[in-house]
Image (tube, rainbow, N blue to C red; front, side, top):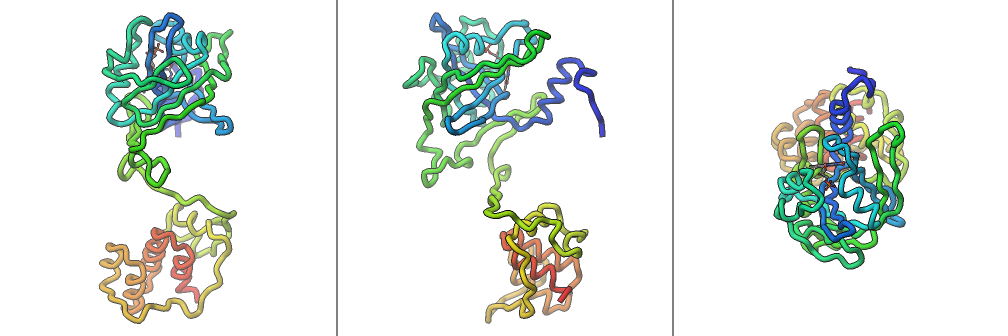
Length: 310
Ligand SMILES: Cc1cc2nc3c(=O)[nH]c(=O)nc-3n(C[C@H](O)[C@H](O)[C@H](O)COP(=O)(O)O)c2cc1C
C-alpha cells in the first residue's frame, strides 16, 4: 500500500489523487448571473448536500489554477447571493464538459454548450432546461479555506429555496434513479453513469443487527461466504433458534440438479436437490445459503448454513 503525504505531491497530482478517492461525486451545473446581467453556467463536482431542514447544499469553486483568479461562479454568487443548481444526466455530460471551459465572463456558456434556459421563480439566474431536477438557491455562508496561506479552496453553503422536478422522473411519487440517469465525476477524465446494473437497493436495517461477531464460528470463518453474505446474516434482529424440523418442503416440488436450480435462482429447489442427492458439502450448502440471502431471506439462509450442525 502506498502512503502519500499531500505536500510531497505537485498541486495537479494532489488534486487528482484526492478526486480519485472521493468519488463518484455528484455534479452541480451552477447557473449564476453577474451584476450586469450576464448569465454564466459551469459544472462543479465539489458538491453535496449537508442538511435537509433547511435544505443546504455546498459547492467548492476553487481559485483557478489556470488564471489564478476567482471563478465567475464564485464572484457572481458573492455579488448577488443567488444561483440555481441543475443536476447532470448522462445525455448532458459532453455539453457540461464543454461548458467547463474557462470562457471570459461576458461569454455565454449556455450558447457555447448548446444548453437552454428555463426561467426561475424566486431567483434571477435561470436553470437548465435539459435537466430533470433543479434547485433555486440563495447564499447561506461563504467559507474561504487557508486564504492567507494561498489555499485555493472556497466553500459556498447554499440554501435551497425551491425544487423543480420533472414529472417524467417520478414513480409512485418518488424520484426514481432509474429514470434520472445521472452522471457523476471520478478522478482524472473518468465519469460514471448511475444506470442499469450500476443501480441497486440495500434495505436499510430497521433495528440494530446482531452483528457478524455474534454468528456461529462455522459461518463467520466460512471460506465460501463473502463479507456481504455475513453482513446480511449479521443484520438479523436475533439469532434464530435451530429448527429441528428444517427443511419442510411444499407437497409438490420440481427439482433438477443443484447447479441448474441455483442458476435459475430457485433456492428451495436447490435445497431439495441437495438433500435428495445426499450432497451436503459445505460448499454446496454455502451456495444454497447465499441464494436465500440473494432473496433477502436471512432466516432461511441461516437454517441452511447450520444444516450440517444439527
Ligand atoms: C464535471 C466537472 C466538475 C468540475 N468541478 C469543479 C469544482 O468542483 N470546482 C472547481 O473549481 N472547478 C470545477 N470544474 C471546473 C469548472 O467548471 C471550470 O473551471 C469553469 O470554467 C468555471 O467556470 P466559471 O469561471 O464560469 O465559474 C469542474 C469541471 C467539470 C467538467
